[in-house]
Length: 244
Image (cartoon, rainbow, N blue to C red; front, top):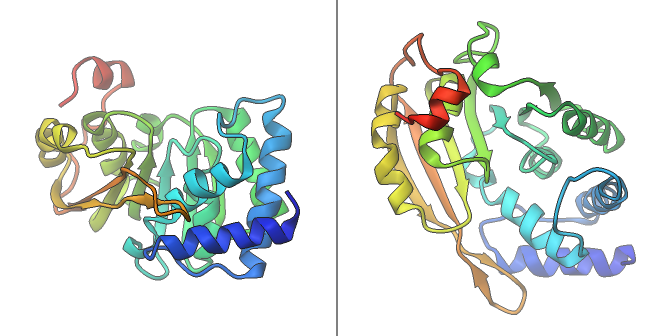
């Protein structure tokens, strides 16, 4: 896809989703470079199953940026289980005021995110290869972030224990789900409370294509109201086998 066609489709998608930040040619150019880079690397590394440019714009970029309006100015964010850099990279492009730490346990993916951030001249991205439950017990990172985000990583009870320890009191954990997650929320209430959180809001946030067709999305926001107990998070095997 040539850039002009790419840009016009970006504009159409962003106009169809009123909750997204505005896209201009400069930002679209960075998304264009990101797309080409991701597809090139994806040929020999498993980054994404979505390989068509229009689908990437909709299901990676627009989807990632749905949380932008819920992130305060100049916030410090950690993206837990960032994978191929979503929402890290689109958020860093559109929110240069936000400082983002991209966290993933797979070193190859983190190296890709770091190299891509450098290619895109994103000085607001730091990439770390480590398991979330390990880094969350590091005093330099524990309860040091305004926001922890996670997109399509694991079930909400598991995500809560992995993400909430990174959030400072007064901050928020923002989970992005591909469909209505009321059942997950019900199963997560104990984990949210035990990790020092409180369910603040569940937002149904459909993702629209330019034709007006939509896909279900939900954003779940939990406020951090108290310190996470020092014994949390547990080893991942315990978290996955017996969620809180």
